Image (cartoon, rainbow, N blue to C red; front, side, top):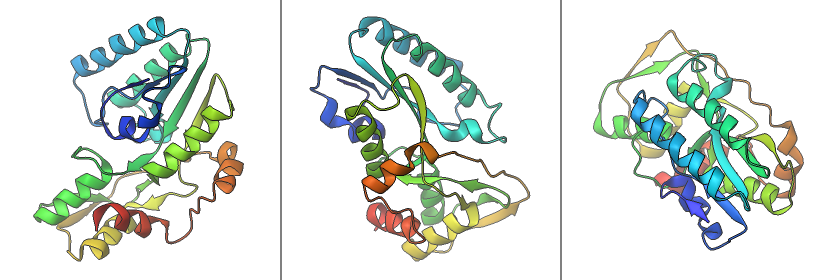
Length: 227
């Protein structure tokens, strides 16, 4: 079963009719959200799901923003940590902390969609000079999570699912400019940090699945979804 209708839910749609699993892909999708009502809705939905589906393997998606010192005190990150604690009350679960997903979605709040919308519309936006972000193709993230779930690996654990490297924000923006063939209207801000995301646990899985986080990964992923 899959709860949700957004980018992650669509990526795990093959679980929709599998009664052995509950894939919880419903909740706050905007990391900049500060609306307590939205957080409360997810918490209530999650609490109900944990209670109602005690007989299933429970799959929850958290965020790698937890490792970003510039975001650790944000309402969104604090909310996600609280939701992880609720999921840990289930007797059989997987918590996947996911980095910045790239896929087909109309959600304007994803990192890539934000940059692309502003560049295409010639809207001004800030570029944090000291910031890096971790980008992963939805298909690759789903493949890694699916492998872990199907092989019953890391049960009742929290696993980082991310690219093995981060990209400077300016590199991400310039790559988008190259793909779109449009120059962005941005200004540099002396801000940001470089989150350290440990992917060592999934390294063998990445190799097994022949996922290559090489120097061309970013532009290949952008061209896949935005060309």
